[in-house]
Image (cartoon, rainbow, N blue to C red; front, side, top):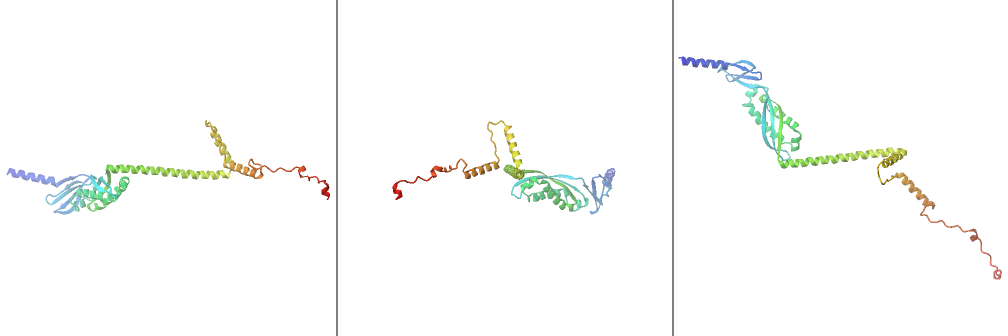
Length: 284
């Protein structure tokens, strides 16, 4: 009799402990009455009638889950391994319990398949340089698909992208070629802009001939300031053209060094007529 009383007392105490439940601020209790959904309670003290009611605890805190490395092939046929981390939380405890058997396992499996599917649609360059956009794409897809489970995916972050050593060398060569191309383009752009400025300067100097002489004197001053054993005096092209025209004029007038000597004029004595022949035959 005493043993039966002890067993009964233990059962009553156990039922009392199962009847009174304390839920923390971040917890909710999904209550079922005889197998049917009744309500969601919490936080605080929750009374659950034993045998008749059942309660499932659900945490509303953000869960962090590390997605294992996924082998995938990018759009440009490069094999890589991608690791990511997933942040999600329960926003509707009723859906998280009723609509899916194990929301944690379901979300993790869905994250793995979605990560392979989304990243496999992009090239390796996009995978390395546009992680933020890819993170948003994966997050939007997961958030939409887990909405019926009462899950909110707050963030997805790609952690590591492992590439083969041969591909790393190829990427390094590609980056070096890209930097060389940019350097050549910048150099060519600088040459083009400098030529434009020179053309504008030439047009401006052409409007004021005196400015060309000032520039010529400035050049001579710069040359004289340097310790040179030989000094070359630059002459403007207009001076050379003037000297050429002067030489041509002298040649035309015959005063130039290459002109032929002028014919000498005959003296007046040479032009006089010879004396008439005084022989008697002339009178005949």
